[in-house]
Length: 448
Image 1 (cartoon, helix red, strand yellow):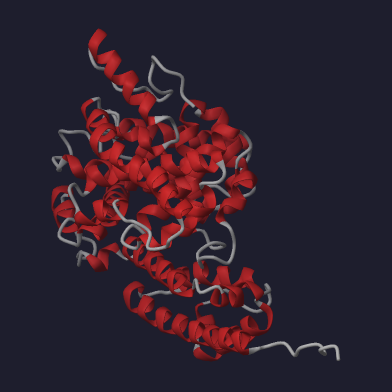
Image 2 (cartoon, rainbow, N blue to C red; image 1 turned 135 degrees about the horizontal axis):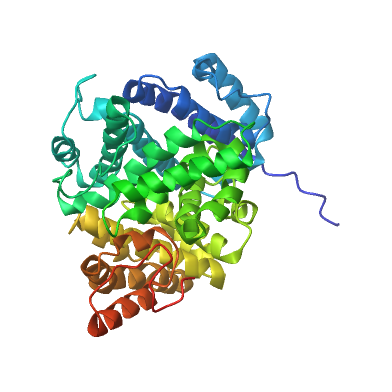
């Protein structure tokens, strides 16, 4: 007798649904923790909430309203997720929930630190604090947190100086900013965040192309006039971050006008767009959508796309460096695509250079790139060595010392062949006085 059709086994599905309920309850706990850290949780809810919103329907979750995070609202969200979100259920069925949750915690930790710097560093209100004192406070945190805190200090200090005296001049010049060299990259990045937020924030969707271009030219001038030699790119990159994450309605016109206003700096801008994608509302909740899908939507040319991909890898790697298991699936997935793999390796190299400069000789950095996947998957092991370990070792042993010597550390804030750049700089130093790369790149090799 033929065997009749088997009834579907719903055990795994039911278990997944229970885990979704647990996940939703965990989000409620997370929101309360974040509220304690941030005070006003509305912006965090906006980012986390929009990820949930895109996983279900627009009518379920108004992520702009803090009241959404009340328990009754979260219960409604949980029910909707159970019934409608195939992506989230699959997340738990596939066994990736633990790493997804850890990645979300890592993101929120970084987000809370940057957005609540005054509270974290116990800064008194309405009191001017010299930059060296702010930097010292930032480095009083753990080594992992210090990087983000220094970036926040750059934003805080630049914004405070602007509020007191108007647009600054020579803000991070050596004579005006007697701070440790290790703080300079992220101080410049934070300063760029301030300039971008003030200038882009003054624009509207009604602003003309000429008005937008004028604001962008002013941004470039401010970054140039307030940056030290070899750090300009770190400040300019922040324009992409601010535009993509906080003024998305202006993203198209700003991208168009920046191509006109400062084409030689475009790589930095697009690298910032990539970093912003990782922290964007759509992708704040891990695993529900592929971050890489938006690269072709954001950027129009292949050089732009390579910088976006490298910036995206940079952010993903930096945030999750203490948890290599989170990075493993990305290495496995993207190593098979030569273009993605090239940008991925560059993003890893670049962020390792930046980490080596900002928080030197930290054990968690070497532990990350020396990590060996526990899986017996030989393809993954080889991909990790090729796209994580080897680029990182090259960064620590070769790229970082050369870029530091030649005052070119900001070049890691855009995509380019770092081996070729270093070779170019070293060849140049043997034939002429050392000159850092210009905004357009190293003079003896073609910028990608």
